[in-house]
Image (cartoon, rainbow, N blue to C red; front, side, top):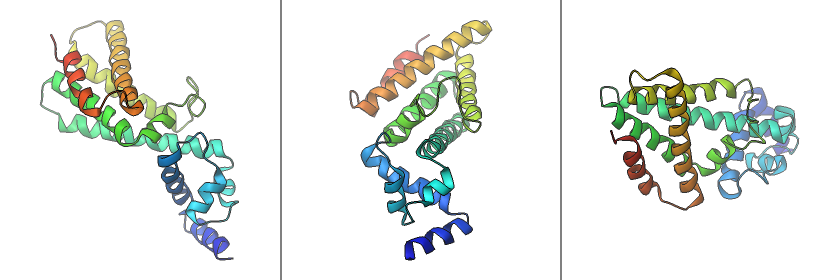
Length: 196
């Protein structure tokens, strides 16, 4: 009875969604998202087992929402770093923004994996909420890369942006998988991005 009451109260006050998301993120820290169940999420949030279905509809919808939340966090962190590097040289700014990307992955590996899970965010078909977030990350990377090659043709900037993103993302994946440490990633970025 108490569990149903909590669920109803949370829902009426608009707290059910965030409470379920937070519970899911806590579970993901120890088990990832592949085996996450809505029943476990409900139990962790202290609500009835049906509450997640009423709010999100199904497990995929919850995972999509968590993926969007993770991408928003990553984009915010990168934007904050861009602001913090205003006035510095373009190469230093690029290293610091790339390091921020890697740092987010190192601090939140479960969220990072979810963001880029092709079954959750289908390549070429992002959700309505995810599309502008992906666009924001791409635009920030393109802007940062363009500053490294002033005067370059647009197609060269596009190719260079893809290469820089691939390198930064690859380093993040290596850190998440435990093949290198986060401390090793920054010198790699410096070697890649600060050479003339």
